[in-house]
Length: 215
Ligand SMILES: Cc1cc2nc3c(=O)[nH]c(=O)nc-3n(C[C@H](O)[C@H](O)[C@H](O)COP(=O)(O)OP(=O)(O)OC[C@H]3O[C@@H](n4cnc5c(N)ncnc54)[C@H](O)[C@@H]3O)c2cc1C
Image (cartoon, rainbow, N blue to C red; front, side, top):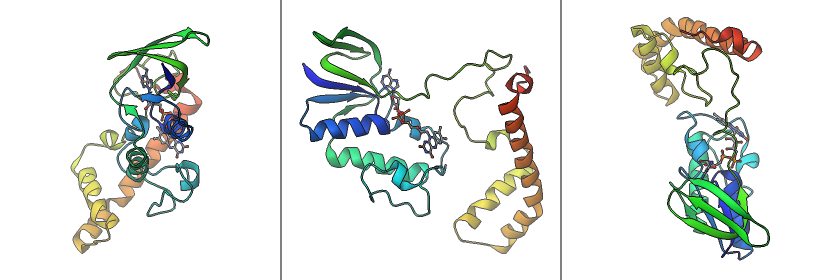
């Protein structure tokens, strides 16, 4: 019988696994996706809201290039943490049932195996359990409960395409004049797009039932 079975390898599950390992417990983490699965699903390049001290596994170990880490820097931090400490994590294994009690221990059934553990820790986060609004339109493919990239929703015309491509060299410090001029020419239009998106989001947050078009 295991001492501890942890469900979920997000930051919470990883901290618990680290603590269990330090205590010398016989533990295993079962994760339906990948290490830090929720963070892996953030949009590519996404900058976190939090500063390193709120996210790192050990003080001073997360060192982003800027003030706040990107998705990639944070993912790399968590994955290295797991690999460096050889934490016991089974990825790609979904828990489907937990039964039992304190006296006899808990039986955890996954889509691959069954485990018997003295204790079970649910570190499953909240992202897989969206709060449904029960309003028309929320089942449409364009309505998401996870933060997805906005690019697919910006006007699909040539100018927007050029603008997105013009940003890339500027962000990487290479500023060819031709691209820069194009950026300035189309900048106002991009700002208009973002203002429109922000307005839609604000309206959605205040009145979701009015904002979801059923088309
Ligand atoms: C775009 C975006 C930006 C964010 N920015 C920030 C930020 O700047 N700062 C901040 O503090 N928070 C931020 N968050 C929230 C942050 O991601 C969560 O607070 C954090 O991931 C919670 O960690 P957790 O370990 O509790 O849960 P999660 O990271 O959600 O981990 C839960 C894990 O459990 C697994 N799991 C669930 N069910 C099962 C099952 N049945 N079997 C096996 N495994 C299962 C999931 O696959 C997942 O890997 C952001 C979220 C998003 C979407």
